[in-house]
Amino acid sequence: MNLAHLTALLRLPRVLLLAAAFAGSVHAQAPAPAPAGQVTHVQGMATAQQPDGSFRFLGQGDAVLEGDTLATTERGFAVLTFRDGSKYTLRPSSAFTVERFAHGEGQEAAWLKLLKGGVRVVTGLVGKRNPAGVELRTPTATIGIRGTSFDARLCGDDCRSESAATAGAAPPAPVVPVAARVVQLNGQASAFNRERVSRSLAVGGSVFEGEEVRTGEGSTMVLGFRDQSVVSLNPNTVMRVTSFRFNQPGAQNESTLGLLRGGMRALTGLIGKQSPDAVKIKTVTSVIGIRGTGMDILCEGPCVDPELGLPPPPPSEPGAAPRPEHGLFMVTWEGTPYFALGPLDVPLDRAGHIGADNMPRILLSVPEFMRAFAALRPDTVAVDWPRLFATVDPGGADGLYVYVRDGHVYLRSGDSVIDLGPGEAAWSGKTGEARRIDPVPGALTLDPTPIPDNFSGLSGPLMHLFGVTVGRAGTDICTP
Image (cartoon, rainbow, N blue to C red; front, side, top):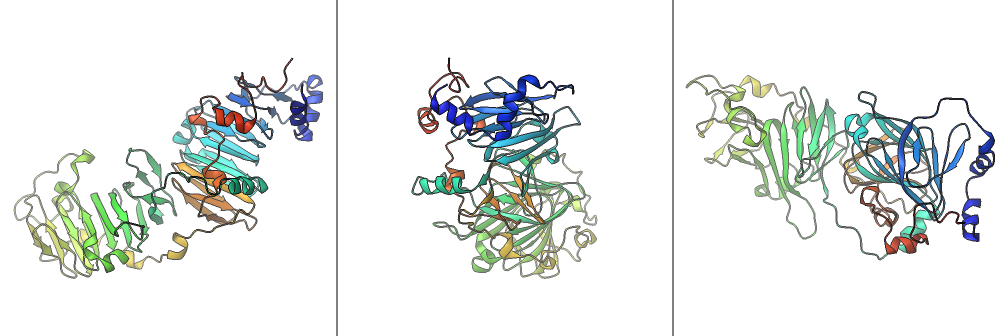
């Protein structure tokens, strides 16, 4: 064992060294802990310790057991693959515990605890089957995982040094800004990105340009957009944020929403006040334009987008009283929206309708179903706009930092809970409050430690970074 290896060994926590010294004489009679996964790769030195004190060094292919506290040394890292396909990179100078892991159907759970350092995570089947059953706890906060790829680090001087070293380096690709956040949610709702990958939404959750939002049976939701427009969605509604740009450098403000099915209540914001023609709501039947507007819209029957694959409605009888399945309906409660088909203005407190005949008309009276929307009228919803989109710059302060690459997580610290989407980051410090942060420190965005799903052995830069030679994982710990 050379001096460098001995130095790395001496840096292990004292409790681990004591356990190693007596591991040969300790034989626990308790049942063997269940395997949770295995080590895909080890660089440098990594160890595992059970609650009974039994201790072992880890190499490639070794089992990761329920109850293990895993640790890496200053110049090493470990890549772990769990039985549900989730993958974790345990960064240098890190330690975390596998408190519980089960992936049997109906019993899915992964309870992990980060004690020191950081992890880079790509979740697996447990996170998809039972998102509420996956948590990464730290001494000050809990990260709830909702089928995602993210980093978590307990930062101190190490992160400050790394961020300073990356100052001036090329930043990662720009992230699409958040278009809206969930203000209220009763029931369940989900968002689908352009690749048709879905995620559950929660209060404070982000919605991005190009995403499709769906509310569940009996569920309603209120969205607040960056320009302070507010949209409430009825149950069983599908809405798409076709385009949304507000105060983005080099881009004109615009807002185009697509109502594919269901009911929505909309109150336009700053874009509509500044440039009414830049705000549109699209349906299969007609585009709806606005003039400083509040309106309720229902899209069923022939108005439903064919891409949803719903069966066509039965034809309506001539002269029959309007019913929800008869097409596109709009009621105005502020301003003057209009159907572009025609065009036809829909005056205040009146109802417009376009049915299967594609003929826009003003109805003699407002149908009762248009007065019975389950969603709240947007002008009755109190929105704390400064806090909804607020971020802070912690200036490298100590604490837990979370950075989401894909999917979403929530960070709970004390009484505060923040839902994070792709490209977003949050921090929880000594105050015990979770806050969104901007900018994201370079220690997270430019971390050279490999992301586990992209890992395929060591590249030249990584070998230089960790000061190692090529070989089987673990062979650089001690050599004959």
